[in-house]
Length: 235
Image: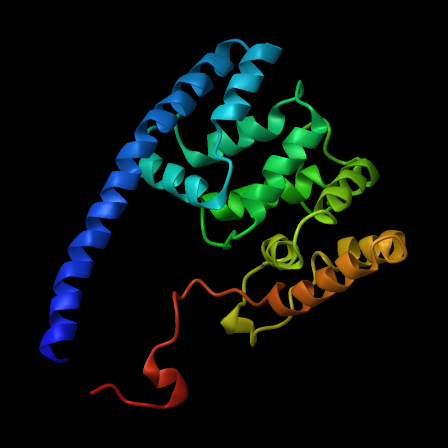
């Protein structure tokens, strides 16, 4: 590394650390709104309080991950990401379109991982009427209505973001211990979607099939591959 590269590194690392700290500090106010609205919702689930909680809940993946990290830094039996997700999917007084828009925005860029990301994906499948997943909401199970709305909204966004939605939606773990066998638990859901919507939304169904092939049973929690994976020794 030359002197210029070293200077860049010395400057960049503290800058990135400071930026991350500032981001978390800026989000603290929104995080507190979420905590307070959750407390209120537990004792009064009026339509007004449901909307307050819905609006306070993260609206994109980065906020979702940051919320989970902040909850982990302040461990509580009541205030944890599982309870927050369950409360979100139990809301019954919301506009379906607005709820669906939030689900899409949260899923775009989503990455399957333990705890919150896995819990949210499971709840999302339940909301979409997946027979494999236990529903959290009384509205869950009406898959025709849920998918009619979701696909109509997906058809209005970019192909890239549609693929990112499908990538997260079909993600499931790769299990090395059983030889990486394909995870086909959601195959019936995929086949139902293809049969019902392939004529109405052929491009979306092609994207869905592609994502299923690549990401169902294809996700690892390893965080990457070390050099030994390719038979290369570290120096």
